[in-house]
Image (cartoon, rainbow over all chains, first blue to last red):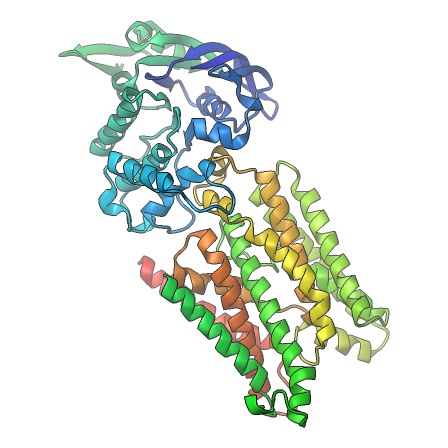
Length: 252
Length: 318
């Protein structure tokens, strides 16, 4: 589990995460939603140890996150950044294999287990048939799956994903949601920043509503997702409707 | 893949042999170890020249591949980050002071060292590749301006022409002493540069992804700056500025061994050596009174070649 204890994060002079205390659990998908500039990405980057908290701390299964060695932290937390276009047209297999970097010494060769983890990750993300293709020849959806496979190859306990649905069409959004859900079912902790409220409602076990770095609600999606909470978070009226057991959120 | 790598080694051996044999006087292998004039030319002139071509080309190709990987930019090379021009500035100061040989080498290395320190200070502890390239461009411009200033202040036309000739880069009339001076720095620099492979691979996905994979960006920046300073500084110190090798060789090698940064490093070193040895052999064979300077020849060959490559690249993208 990941515990935030009175966590605050500054970007320059600006306070972007304000005194946040909460606990995230493995085996569950936690979705962070909130308006632009609410501090969602900053919070996720703090969890990935990419920004230093200005006060408070983050505990990863009892260990203070900032005290962990970088490789150890990387083995336990996988981070999927927003819209990264690969700089070089490497093959899909090479890109997925980057997920093994925290396990391999500077000059060491990958072990049989490293290779196996890469193949398994590609199979789980359904991209084995693309393994020898160059990443610049992939469609947007295929590239998203390849990047996700890179995270899976890292065999981390936690997956942090920043807007994994951006620029994907509905079928590929569905595929990505499915991969995230599968990861949680396999026992990983999954934390996702999303802008699509309907997708959030479908995916989330736990929902974290964020506004100006403060929480407007955190807990099981069914309890936290209310019209009042959405109004407070986004400053905009939305209707939550139930269609045959599926939740849909309609802006008014 | 391994066949392609073997092909590179064969080409390297051939271009090294060519560099030993080619020139106004062709020296057949039979004369290499004889007491004939051919044997003397081989030992005193051709061997140091070929060795320097190998070393200089190698580190230029290698540092180009590392810088392109680090900056995630296919247009980067050692001249962009200011190391070459700062080392050249050091060399120019030495020439103006009437210092040559090991002294000139030392001045150029001090110039390179200063550029590395400034580069690290200007780009800051937390500064990533973007700050690094901006700092590098500032340095390159500044040392270029200072060099121009010194040339304009040169006491006599002879000094001016000596400086300009040195700046243009050449392997002419080098001795084994130059090889001995440069080799330790180049070897140390190459070690620094070669140890960046894994981090450069991680950077394929961007800085955040690399850091989340456990890569220490501060350390990487230090390795890149130090490696480039030592290796390229030493190469400028013995040959002057030879451009384009660091820029074009990684591009050629990407087509040959794929784009993964770590797999590009050794092939780029070999490719740089091949290109430099071949170009240096060619300048000896061009008929005429004098010899075309290697730096000029390289740019003359390099620029059109690079345009061709770009055109092909665009066709591929279209």
